[in-house]
Image (cartoon, rainbow, N blue to C red; front, side, top):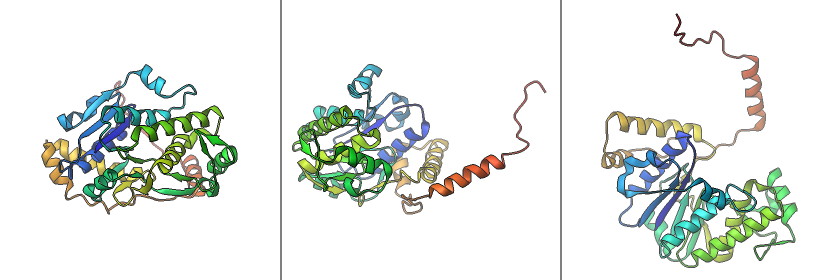
Length: 293
């Protein structure tokens, strides 16, 4: 099984999340991981992992090409899957957003992939019944039509794409279908925010039995502030103590994955009130170093 990460930009938090995620898998690698590939423009952030990972630096023009005719950035995720599958066609492929970690059994996950079960992080429900404005608009735009050769029926599900597990059997076929669906959705100017997620959801359900990766993998997309604090403390301690990779893996065995929530919903009203309070009561007596004094 090979792991794949796609990490671009200079936001250091994304890179230390990816490092932590990789460490969580290395704790259980047990010869199950044939490759760990990081597609990035910042390979310098992964030196601590040494030869256990491969950083693929993708040129800007290649990244632009991956976005396709309609310059949809997240089409690059599907192209990165294609790139990895072409390089290791006989290996199951597990794509991970940076804000993920392995807390369950890697052998169980690898066995399921090996026997033809695909994974995405969690099932969110049929697109036709999802409540958000974006999803309702998407359904109105696609219902009754065909994209990538697949008729848009009410039963078609939306799955969270923070984890995408593709068995080796029919891998390039499934990825090609996702690309066709994605491109057709872009051509019809469907609301773009969730296009690649829906394309992957439909393609994997059409090609495989699709299950949730949530029992094995945590995805803290809604609680990044809390997890970023815990992860930065772990990596800072590693740096200050000059820990080796082996020592980091040993330290991670004592990490309590249940200490922080992986999902939290905050009402928009609360966010608006917080913004109003911050504007009404800005900080006072803010000082900076003055080199002239």
